[in-house]
Image (cartoon, rainbow, N blue to C red; front, side, top):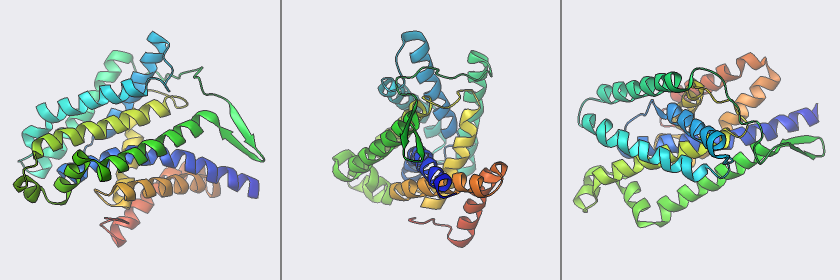
Amino acid sequence: MADQLLQQIVNSLLIGSVYALVAIGLTLIWGVMNVLNFAHGDFLMLGMFTAFWCYTLFKMDPLFSIPVCAAVLFLLGVGIYRFIVSKVMKGPGLAQLVVTFGVSIFLANLAVMLWTPDFRLIEKPLLSGTWSLGSVQLSIPKFAASVGSVLVSAAVFFFLKRTRTGKAILAVEMNRDAALLMGINTERINSLSFGIGSALVGIAGAFLSMYYYIHPQVGGLFGLISFCIVALGGFGSIEGAFIAGILIGLVQTLGGYFFDPAYKYALVFLVYLITVWIRPQGLMG
């Protein structure tokens, strides 16, 4: 019993850190632009497909295709912001939601048209197998994805807190009008933030492609979970998104262990509803 529980806790930490990386990209976009990107999960799907095709066409392992996924998703994010999202930034909030929802539908159906709805898997990644640590079985690709997600999350935190551009992003997040008066190009910061948020989810997609099935609808569930994480951690809070990602990983994994596995996602959304009811601003909002 204790060994099984320890195994589930380890599994929850492994998936929770990846969830956190996905949510950090979403909360960065929300915090700077006050736009909820419904296409975030589909960006994850495109990151996974980018890693898959790099492996299939060029024999490039997902571990080495991370920079490619980040670059592709960064350029896609910047392009979508400049040519689509920026056009409705001054419009009503509903218009922004409809636009990103439309982008989500377009990307998902484009993926179906280009690559069919079939499930794909990278069968022989460089990192595979398991480590036995006493009674705990540690999946090597999951462990690598978890460690990589933590390192990337730490790098984002350092970038925002220690660099001039990062501080400009935080300034726009805190008070857009004051940042504009101080000479910060808020339009450039918007574009950069959307690109960085998209690149982060592209990196998460590369990590997940090492062990997760790849298909055009894979982003839907991750997108919904990332919304729950952002709401739990607090919209705009990078630290809150990381902590909430770990908590959601624990709720999902331990919920499936103590109850029926079919209820594990229901428990995640229940935590989201309770959080919104008790503390709408989130843990660190």
